[in-house]
Image 1 (tube, helix red, strand yellow):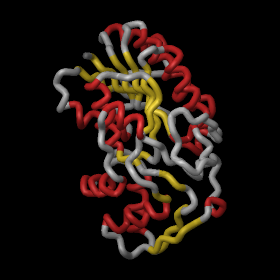
Image 2 (image 1 turned 90 degrees about the vertical axis):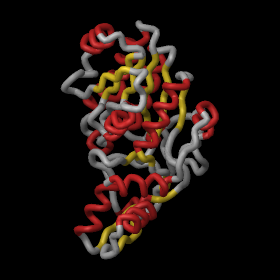
Image 3 (image 1 turned 90 degrees about the horizontal axis):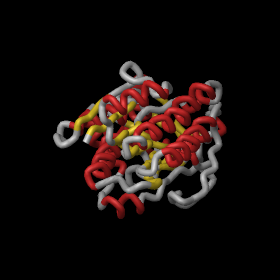
Length: 282
């Protein structure tokens, strides 16, 4: 099986590459913008055809949530148009696509974990373009699997965990939002779930994946500092209103993961267990 990975230089793309060596039965084509411009439909069609691609894992996206508010055109190109191009190209070969999506498809006004069939209601440019990307992928590829995730971090790239470690070492005091609730997701755990789905066979549909458990950004920061051995920085809780941002964040973005666990028989690690692994690897 020939599998195309897009966005291979990102957090999830890098974690996918670490796992690839364990799956010798597949040939992986790891690409980022230098190797394949996913906003170029002709380039995608050529690549998929020339390399006999059987499946695509689309890890590429415009993920700068605040910047998206003023970069709608680019955000739409990467998050909405490109996934549809990829889906259409692989459909011609009777293949499958895994599209990575986000908790931002919901407005965060709920108070129980979101299920896959809950009605999306995005409250940002980023969330709207990602939801449109889901719909495009489902429209153009019969074997489309969409995985929504949240609060992604890893040893690669820029992310909340690395930023809090850096700031914790640089500063004596730090304010962090306490009234936004969700679940952190270690990209390595998500990558493993994707590989499990590939090996067991793609079951089309929408799925949710994050680590287990629920926490606020404030409590997450306290845990990061404790595990990283940072003791000289006082972390104080902030209301969302005290830290205004261009894009609205979901106040509650906990995802119900029952479907992916039952479909693929996977056990998802608790968020703190994954965080300890990540910080150890850092």
